[in-house]
Amino acid sequence: MQHTAHQRPALGIMFVLMSCSSLQFGAAFAVTLFPLFGALAVSVSRLAIASIVVGSTVWLAARWRARRGDMMPPGPLSWSKEQWRAVVIFGLTFGMMNGFFYCAIDRIPIGLAVAVEFLGPLALASLLTRRMRDAVWVLCALAGMLVLGYEAAVGRDTDYLGLTFALIAGVFWALYIRSSAKVGALVPGASGLAVAMLVGAAFIAPVAAVVPASQPLWNAAQDPVLLLMIFGTAMFASVIPYSAELMALRNLPQQVFSVLMSMEPAIAAIAGWALLNQETGPIRWVAIFLLMTASVGITLTTTKGNSHKQKDDGEDPVPMPLPE
Image (tube, rainbow, N blue to C red; front, side, top):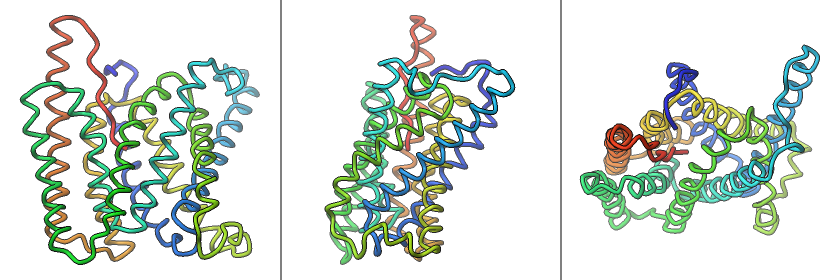
């Protein structure tokens, strides 16, 4: 994605910061609901509610534009096969990424889960560079994982299933990165996001229905406080961050977006400490720092390499992967 005249970097940076903060603090808020309904059921509910909120907003905006006589963006019924394919793939990766991540933070601290999950987009960035000099950043990421491995070896509270869930979420994070950029380019407005959220919720709902939980999700209808908590989770963990991400992608070059999003593991650790009293500890902070350094380093060196390539042969640079 090239930096075009209509992009506004300052606005894009604001949307990135909004996305990072809202997503991680929203996830910390969702953890409080896991003991009641289970991680997957909470993930389904927030995606479904977020889809309704975003879809309703898009519909109201379209009605307002129609009254003014403005041109309205095409709705889902008029999408092409290419647009529908992109949105469905986006939704599937959306659902799997969120489902596995919520299962991870149900077992391990949020900061640790995000740091491990971060290996997905980092690995994708490493594969796209294809340059030996970027090996130093790969080694930096491996060092971060070795630090986490050391902690797991000497610690007493390591949950290996939680770490596995975080790694799987990282794989789908990498796929989400590619599909979200494509939807942002092919589908105008936020209708693609609304449909993708609904697809993601529908995809993981059958699994959530058979996973045991303390009580079924529909029991929340009897408690206004629980309903408010579920709605708040949907807003802070889905509507605000993902809408902000799509807006950021339209106002920032992808490599700048990646650098800014590299601080997400640190924000997640702070959110876990502030809202859930989760202590990150010096060893995990070292691992988080190494992973963040690797992400920033590989993003910056890839940016330079892409610029040189574009000057030499006139080709478009290889799109940089965008973290969650």
